[in-house]
Length: 264
Image (cartoon, rainbow, N blue to C red):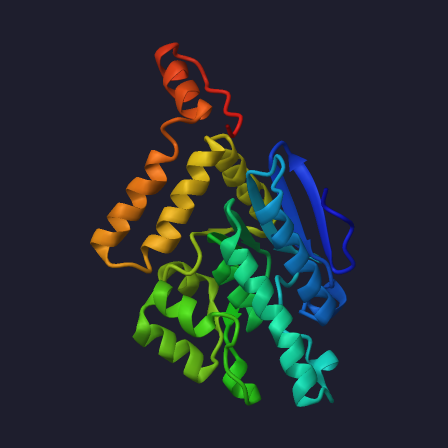
């Protein structure tokens, strides 16, 4: 059971799909401490008890901004200890998102700056509106990316491009994000959420255990040498052989019908 949250909204617009909306539009959906706590609780629940959720879509409320990063008004006047304590919550929610077993698709409905871009990078892939802008602006504020930006971005765009983005703090366009592989697809504003939900439904229609094992194999395999990664892949593959869904998939193929997967 997913509870009601203060700073995020959750709903199930279709079977097996969870739509998660960052819900602080009055401050550009920026992170305050409570949003960090709410997201940490949500991702942790989906790790421990996913229920019937097979894919999630993450977007921002208000139709203008995805996420502007940390709430600098809340941070104004924080002691060093308070800042570090808050950031620990943020770090844990990013790790929980990365550990989420089902795919999470970002639907970037506007600018994604600083921690907002890092949040998008922690998702499995992203669709964005054509008017979106992106930046990791931390060095312009006397800090640096601290929620995976210096690690996730180079893995996506390469070291030299990531250095240019991070060390300048300069914003870049949706077209750049598409060309550099940061987002997978650009959509007109009215089409973004339907497109993201449609791809989530396509994922959710597949065997959920297979999707989770494939995601895990890619995520962790990229952190290994190739031969070890191959072995990890086979271990993930072998866990699917005795499942009911594997048997159902083969039966459905031979009976020329659509399979009914139950996650068993």
